Image (cartoon, rainbow, N blue to C red; front, side):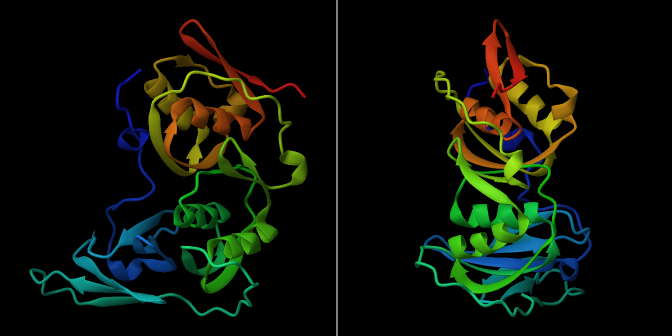
Length: 268
């Protein structure tokens, strides 16, 4: 066991700043508002990585100066006269929103044939919820909403992209009802150290290698698991509970044998 290990420190985190060309190449996908302020979610130029930015954060030669209801304003670095201020606009929407109970957080989204893993991740991040998304959830999603509750937006999204259930304290999403693994008794295990994990369509073999570093156990990941991908968001959760949830998503369980963690399919 490595004391104080935070998986986000040893993994390539989803949220962060990467090398890119210009801010104009970014696409504004969502804006969320809650008691802690506003967050803008920007898709980078290659269309694969979703970044989260708050006011005052630096982006290339700009700083995110202001987040409005449907746009973000980027202030140019005064020491870089060749760049100018930039405004990124959330796209138009035509969605009719269902009635929903008010919550502390609202979200504005502009999704057009987007990856459902990106969409589900940003809603989980907005709600501050742990999340697990099965590899088979692949149907592109289109959804436009303005200043609605996260729960209402997610219900619209799930209707078009899969089925869900609460699992191991997380919001788990599957492609079809028949994909849901059998539920069995949860074995009580000592509470592990708390970790934070954030992956969108991460390679499950890489995720399991992180658990080797985190837990100190040897883990052999079966090939049928290692080739799968997963979206997972877990904040300040015991590592063993996160591992339990990740494996349960694919119908697997684990047990300790000496210095090894053994993985096996859950029996019906």
